[in-house]
Length: 201
Image (cartoon, rainbow, N blue to C red; front, side, top):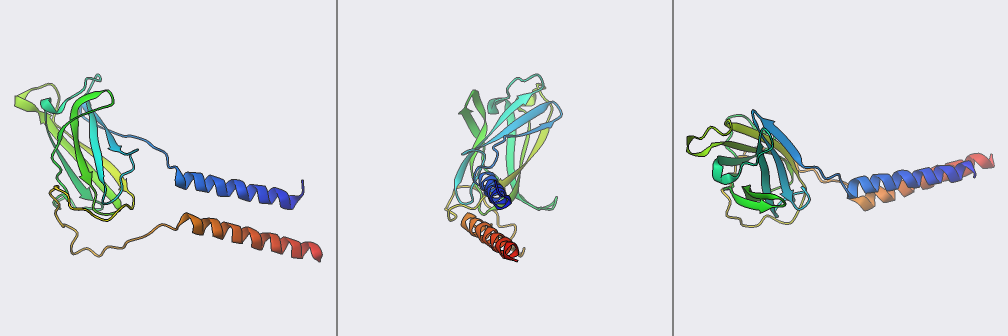
């Protein structure tokens, strides 16, 4: 196999690897613990929320030892901040929690969240036992969430506060996949053209 052919195949392999990494990001649930309570955050679909689209969000909340904590036993509250945020800043969203049954979990805290725009957010779930119970310690769990671009913002029943009104927002858009592919093929074409010119000398 000629050297030029080897380079061509390597470039194709690298291009496919980049494409698969961009097109199919890894799906991983976010797990956080505080004192004797832990939670796994699930956002549907596929833990990949999109701006302007309602995302079913729920927390597999468990106490130490693995016993599930249903919403009926927890005085829980969820707040959402746009990142970065200051400690005294009011939350962007305060979606009400409802009991959700999903997968093998029954009655866990959950809600529907419509993130207003793409970017980084922080979800904070706070809770303590209901009726003065001592089954677990009060907790505060924080989850970092990245929201992708989606459809236009729709009217939603959520309590949304415009806390970033005076902040200059720099909106960055990713490079389209076709532009990356075209750039790669152009670079390969230039490379092979230079190689042919060097071989003719």
